[in-house]
Length: 97
Image (tube, rainbow, N blue to C red; front, side):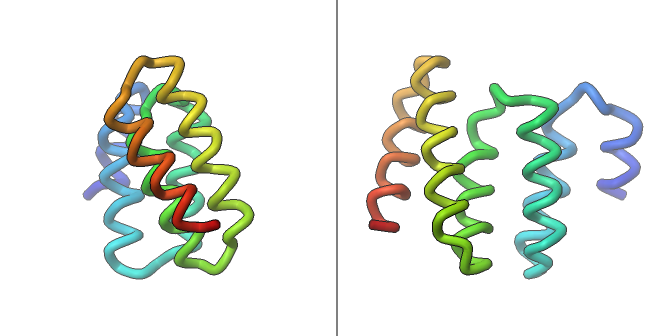
């Protein structure tokens, strides 16, 4: 159903985010990684995606990619003036060392 919503609303980031989160919830990490990458490519200002994408990458064991994703998110959140997301991303990055 989520795939259908993504196809029907390609300009809307929320269905893509929902799809990526469903893959994450199901433990389908490669699909979640790909879905978050597509979301961020199409909607780089969808700040919530960076935190979740970083979590998936870290959970997959790719700590360096997770750090890079969090860093990209920090830049995007700073540019958007989203202090809450900025703090969450900085915390997540700090936890990775």
